[in-house]
Amino acid sequence: MTKIKVTQLAFGDVLPPNGYFRYTEEINHLYCQYHGYEYVVEKLATHKQDVRNRHPHWEKIGHMRRHLHDCDFLLFVDTDAIFYSFVLSVEEEIVSMLPSDAHFLMAADTVEESRRVNPHDSNSGVILCRNTRRMHAILEEWDDCTDYIPEFDDTRHKWPVEQEAGNRIMRKYHHDYKHVWNYYKMNAVMGQFIRHFMGMKHHEKMRCIREFYDSPLMKRNRELVQLSQLSK
Image (tube, rainbow, N blue to C red; front, side, top):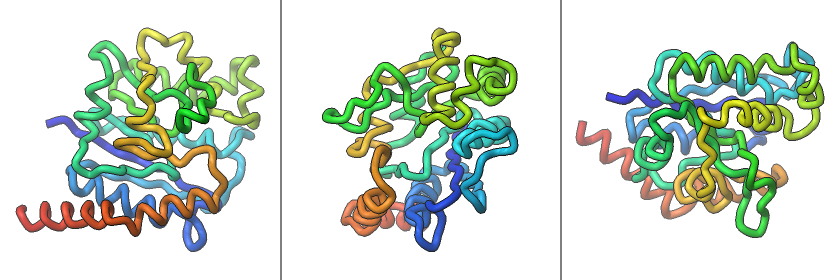
């Protein structure tokens, strides 16, 4: 049986009591519970630069390195992203898009059709990694690139920090990587499977996530989880 692990890294103003992560965490935890995936969350108390003098978003790469060891596939999901439809699985919707000779995938950096930010680059808000030696080596290079490659020094703090560094590294590993042009499956504000509320202000994200949390569809998602528990 394929072991899927879903992981999130939360820090700063997204945390309770005022942050939207209290909603996204519950939604995504329930989704993983329904499908039998391991769900792991790490929370940082403050939104501060990491120990290498880099933007805190860099922490996600080290976080992924720590959690890739004991699963077949690791799916990293940003704190402003949710599983929209519980009837769809990671295996069918995302793993199926990863070629057998590739090690990881991300979707085009597009919010929606009217906001195609950098469609030829990838957005690091949703990342699928296969547990292979090659993938561990790629993550290590991604995580350490600012320490020993001068050309990456600008990505320490200049937005989109680790995402920009990752896109540069992917040009080297293009045979190992899948760029998903159908971004709306897994990385858009109106995503069919995963909705990623990127490119919004905090209060806008809170409104959209709270609306889904209270929606009839989320009510149905909760019922699916309850029914699955009763059938066990």
